[in-house]
Amino acid sequence: MESPPPVRPTADRWSQYAWRLSALPLLLFFAVPVLLLYTQTTLEHWVASLRQPQVYQAIAVSLKTTFISLFVTILAGTPVAYLIGRQHFRGKRLVDTLIDLPTILPPTVAGVALLLTFGRRGAIGSALDALGIQIAFTQTAVIIAQVFISSPFYVRAASLGFGSIDTEIEQAAQLDGANRWQIFRYIMLPLSRQWLLGGSMMSWARALGEFGATLMFAGNFPGRTQTMPIAIYLGFEVDINVALTLSVILVSISFLAILLVKSLVRSEE
Image 1: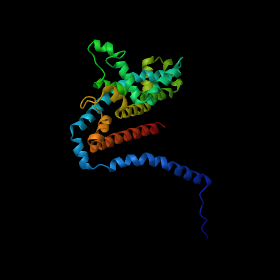
Image 2: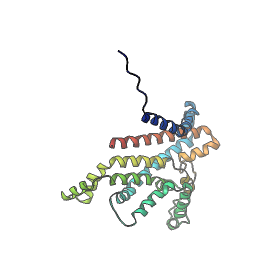
Image 3: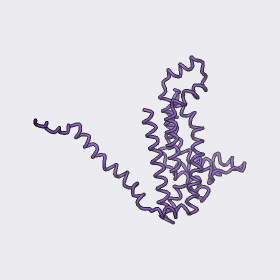
């Protein structure tokens, strides 16, 4: 019995191969520089770099400030996300655009704007300075810069989560006698938890990598306002191994954060 002739690839299969091939240059453009970071340092350099005070101080400052900024973002951003996701009002498009603005604004411009607002001679900072409260070039300034740059990522994800909930579920809860807080607590939050967690992770990862606004608004004071990105920038002038070590740490954390977000979204589907 003769074997059947081999099946030739269909036009669709060749089309898939062509698309994959055309996508390869950009994928390599993203992957190769990142992978090279891991090949340019050794375990000995890692250990030596992590023992230096400016390295673990930068890591400590980054972790402390980003967790505080994430808490502030969730606390202040959730009502805004609910407003955008669940309500229709005049000027909604303007509010929506304002939320997205920090994501495309050059970080240095954001730093200047924050300095003009909260600096010693700023619109709000001058009044605070009269009360003996200084914000610029303090750790509080680091947190404010991180919230300004990273909070749109949480608000956008959370608003999509709130907006994806069927209005009939909310109406059914109202008919059963649930008030607004009960609906939000027992329906909105659980049904949008994947979006909230994903937005939180993206916001935290973006805050961890924030550089320009922090440098302009908070300055560079080791142990106080020097975050990992700032330490990387200075490391290229002082000790390249320090810069490479912190770069690998940031890349690894960012990659894991994005991977976790992708996993959460896929599990929701």
